[in-house]
Image 1 (cartoon, rainbow, N blue to C red):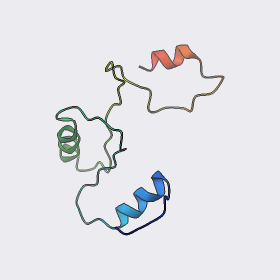
Image 2: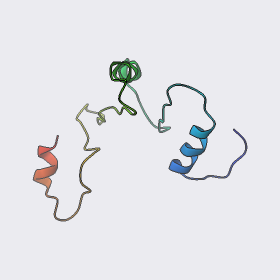
Image 3: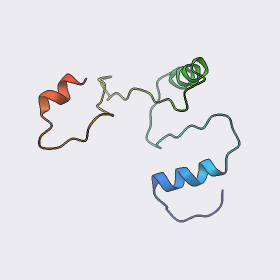
Image 4: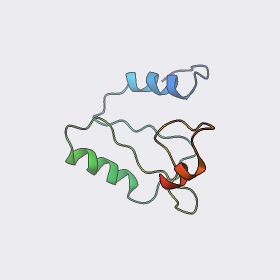
Length: 87
């Protein structure tokens, strides 16, 4: 792709996407640990829903407990109880 300065994660992804020709694009953080079959499940999910433009996995911690990776931003008014009920 060339010798670019550190552009940040989002900008670098956008630059990489602009230079692709594939049908599917996978954006993956360098510290990601994917479970066996996880990527195939995402691809299969997209194939089953031709109207979908994006797929994302459920994020879990090292104990396989789902992490809150969506929803309203966390603030002082967003209680711990609400966080726990979202899981």
